[in-house]
Image 1 (cartoon, helix red, strand yellow):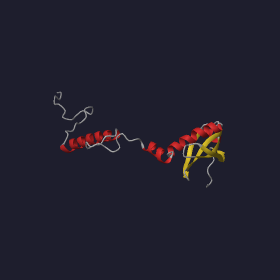
Image 2: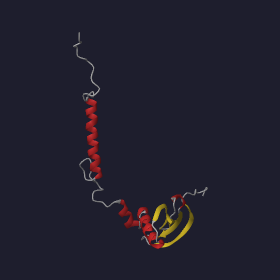
Image 3: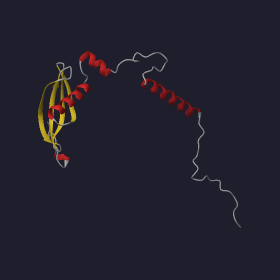
Image 4: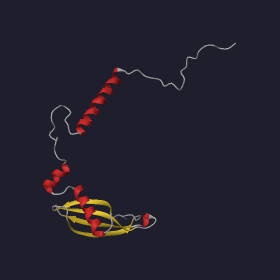
Length: 154
């Protein structure tokens, strides 16, 4: 005789659904509100309805430019451009930025001789000194080495 009873176990294909509780719906609502306030802040608006002091203000990068000359980022970008033009090779990386008596000291790496494999490339570290306007006052090569070479405690 065949068994005609239905199985009371759920199939593995149908996922078990939970009913939302008061705590999970409150969390969802709070997450939606914080998401909205984050997007308003990102757009420059205040989250409490008042106007923000930063609305319509220039980014800090341009404010520092007008007061003290270049920002560190702008100085690094200027050094990259000037060194590439002076050396005739692209700057691979900026490895240091320092400020001394109102001038920027930028250290950059340049591939001087590309080889295969690239761990045998010859790199040069260059130090460029820029004035407040971003013009190169002087530059020099401070080190020449193979890419795969370690510092050796320097």
